[in-house]
Amino acid sequence: MATATAQTKKVIMFTTPSCSHCTTAKRYLREKGIRFKEIDVSRNQKAAQDMVRKTGQQGVPQLWINNRPVVGFDRNRINSLLGL
Image (cartoon, rainbow, N blue to C red):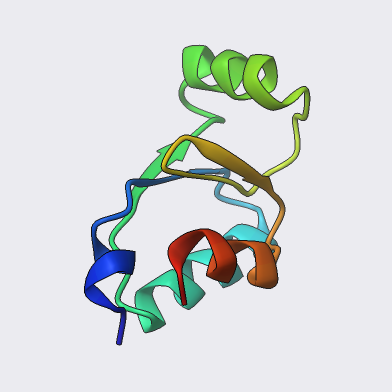
């Protein structure tokens, strides 16, 4: 279960329906009890543009944890930013 600190972090995940790494990342956050907002960039062109503008990357998943981007499912970086 997530710590109180991890639960208060703002987490946004940019995904696409066909992305297996996105599925893995979502499952991981759910297992840790972390709430997140999911944005499907295949359906939201503005969000996709914002994502690329911020990171310079088109790949998903991208997680923004307290507005700090993590490109790809980087478990160590995610844990570090969440304080897990």
